[in-house]
Image 1 (cartoon, helix red, strand yellow):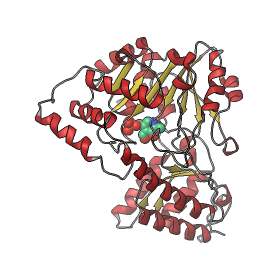
Image 2 (cartoon, rainbow, N blue to C red):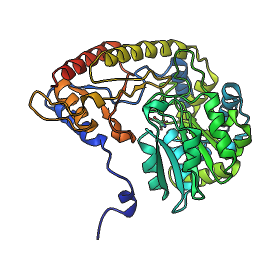
Image 3 (cartoon, rainbow, N blue to C red):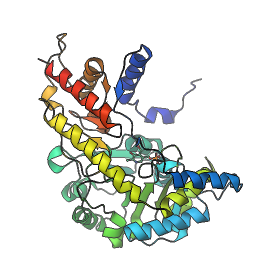
Image 4 (tube, protein in one colour):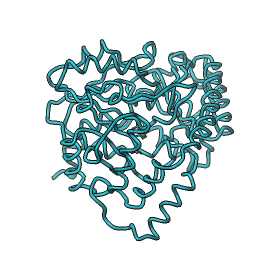
Length: 400
Ligand code: PLP
């Protein structure tokens, strides 16, 4: 009898794995590899959040909580949505999970039937298509090239929707491109969705607080209130508050869907960590002035890498509105030969070459559904980024 079940066959092996494995192997051999593949801020969790967690332990808040979040955290999330997004939710419309990831998979598991389609603009965050497949649905990728700033247009959305469409996933600012939808763009997409009452919208707002150059974040539930009962607004504390390890994500959405998500969670993991929930209350209710300071550091790092890439023959990069990723085109390197005479025929080979020759680990664009690019995270120190960019430059200059 086979050990592995059919669900595993639904998930394709990650194309990033080979590079990650190779980077780890090089490091084991003592090679100093710079990894620009991490999706987390390098800043520490702010002190007032840590203090709230310690106080929660001392107060004995170490037991099971309500399955999908404590009343205190749900109330803090209601306040957050009202204050920052102008969207009014009741606590019965809030779900808290172990990271944004669990909230996303709960929503898909709770709603997808075989044959249901989920529209995913590409490039996308790597987990969306596999989560859809794991939940028994069919991902439908819509290619959104650089000319449209990697964003889906209203015309593309209209064309992709059919009677089998259950969800469309929007992620702004985006992982991997950093591209963000404006209020006007969301209204245009919303106008299309109003004409298709069977389609639900999942907005992944995880990078809401990471934005640059005065770009203003908007979300579908506030821009198109008529869609409110068909929108699941997913967010979390991982990225904004440097709390990736605490594992708290949340969502606001229609009561029936939220109840169904709680049912799934009750039979899988139960409540997210009680102590992390107490910390998340402090994060959401607490001061956010540190965000502006951190964003300024991120902006400087973004500009450093952006200038370096746009100065490197063969690379070309658009200036992102938010998040902490750059997604440069490496189309200009494809077809060129390494000093050893090997022709680079795609972005996976470019990424492998950068790992071997520059000793910098990046993620090929094809992992995110768009070939001819690679992704770097600039959530690492300025000194390391300077080093990485100059090594990438040297490696590119060696190609013939
Ligand atoms: N959504 C996007 C776009 C992400 O990039 C990530 C993390 O990388 C998540 C969701 C998941 O966040 P969490 O760490 O809270 O599960």
